[in-house]
Image 1 (cartoon, rainbow, N blue to C red):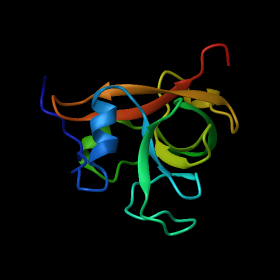
Image 2: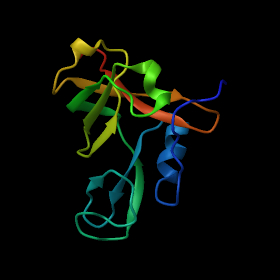
Image 3: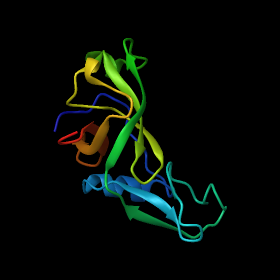
Image 4: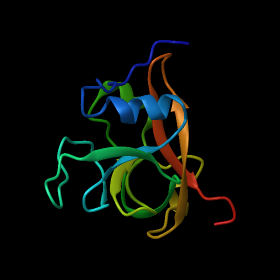
Length: 138
């Protein structure tokens, strides 16, 4: 696998289960065992009820495009070959929002609310990134 020129995530105690899931091509987010809320980004306490009783759950990977920007000038040299590219916020079917990219879609095909599904890009032997593509039949 060639060297990946972009910044890579550095898993820590809170994020490691998320990255272990992506490596297996599974989208996992946290759910509070006390109030049953799903949330993302990974953290050690529930943002709703402050419980520390959390679990990692594999979710559907279905989402809708919540917001997006088309990047025309890379702020990091590693992204320069990709310009223009999308920077998106997706709303997962389970509720939380996350930042990602939409792939396999022309830039002029992006629509707020469009159905998406997760796809995975193995960028190194250790890191797999979740991205989103238009949902089949959507």
